[in-house]
Length: 74
Image (cartoon, rainbow, N blue to C red; front, side, top):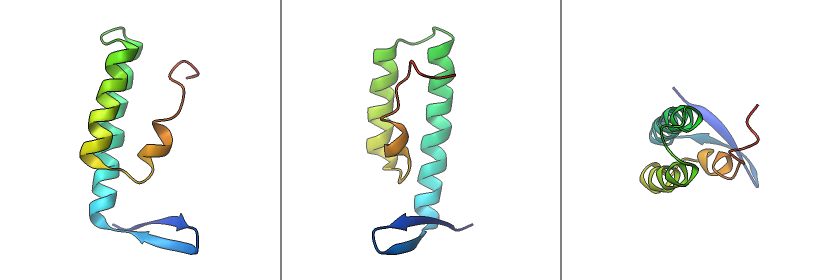
Protein backbone atom coordinates (compact mmCIF):
# COMPACT_ATOMS: atom_id res chain seq x y z
CA UNK A 1 0.00 0.00 0.00
CA UNK A 2 1.43 3.36 -0.97
CA UNK A 3 0.78 6.71 0.60
CA UNK A 4 1.81 10.16 -0.51
CA UNK A 5 3.32 13.07 1.36
CA UNK A 6 3.90 16.68 0.38
CA UNK A 7 7.40 17.96 -0.26
CA UNK A 8 8.68 21.44 -0.98
CA UNK A 9 8.56 20.74 -4.71
CA UNK A 10 5.33 18.80 -4.98
CA UNK A 11 4.13 15.40 -3.87
CA UNK A 12 6.36 12.39 -3.19
CA UNK A 13 5.28 8.80 -2.73
CA UNK A 14 5.87 7.30 0.69
CA UNK A 15 7.76 4.03 0.46
CA UNK A 16 6.36 0.84 1.93
CA UNK A 17 9.10 0.95 4.59
CA UNK A 18 8.23 4.56 5.53
CA UNK A 19 4.55 3.61 5.73
CA UNK A 20 5.37 0.60 7.92
CA UNK A 21 7.53 2.73 10.23
CA UNK A 22 4.77 5.34 10.47
CA UNK A 23 2.17 2.72 11.41
CA UNK A 24 4.43 1.17 14.04
CA UNK A 25 5.28 4.54 15.58
CA UNK A 26 1.64 5.71 15.65
CA UNK A 27 0.46 2.41 17.14
CA UNK A 28 3.16 2.46 19.80
CA UNK A 29 2.42 6.05 20.76
CA UNK A 30 -1.32 5.38 20.86
CA UNK A 31 -0.71 2.65 23.44
CA UNK A 32 1.67 4.91 25.39
CA UNK A 33 -0.92 7.71 25.28
CA UNK A 34 -3.54 5.40 26.77
CA UNK A 35 -1.11 4.34 29.48
CA UNK A 36 -0.46 8.01 30.25
CA UNK A 37 -4.16 8.87 30.43
CA UNK A 38 -4.76 5.90 32.77
CA UNK A 39 -1.94 7.03 35.06
CA UNK A 40 0.18 3.96 34.36
CA UNK A 41 3.13 6.08 33.20
CA UNK A 42 4.17 9.66 33.90
CA UNK A 43 4.43 12.45 31.36
CA UNK A 44 8.22 12.19 31.66
CA UNK A 45 8.09 8.46 30.86
CA UNK A 46 5.78 9.19 27.91
CA UNK A 47 8.33 11.68 26.55
CA UNK A 48 11.11 9.11 26.98
CA UNK A 49 9.06 6.53 25.07
CA UNK A 50 8.39 9.07 22.33
CA UNK A 51 12.09 9.88 22.00
CA UNK A 52 13.09 6.22 21.85
CA UNK A 53 10.54 5.33 19.18
CA UNK A 54 11.16 8.47 17.12
CA UNK A 55 14.78 7.35 16.89
CA UNK A 56 13.85 3.72 16.20
CA UNK A 57 11.19 4.23 13.53
CA UNK A 58 12.05 7.71 12.16
CA UNK A 59 8.44 8.31 11.08
CA UNK A 60 7.66 10.92 8.44
CA UNK A 61 4.55 12.35 10.10
CA UNK A 62 5.26 11.19 13.64
CA UNK A 63 7.77 13.98 14.12
CA UNK A 64 4.94 16.45 13.63
CA UNK A 65 2.73 14.74 16.21
CA UNK A 66 5.46 14.39 18.80
CA UNK A 67 5.55 18.18 19.26
CA UNK A 68 1.86 18.31 20.27
CA UNK A 69 1.05 19.15 23.87
CA UNK A 70 0.01 16.14 25.92
CA UNK A 71 -2.24 18.24 28.14
CA UNK A 72 -4.34 19.65 25.30
CA UNK A 73 -5.95 16.31 24.42
CA UNK A 74 -9.72 16.56 24.20
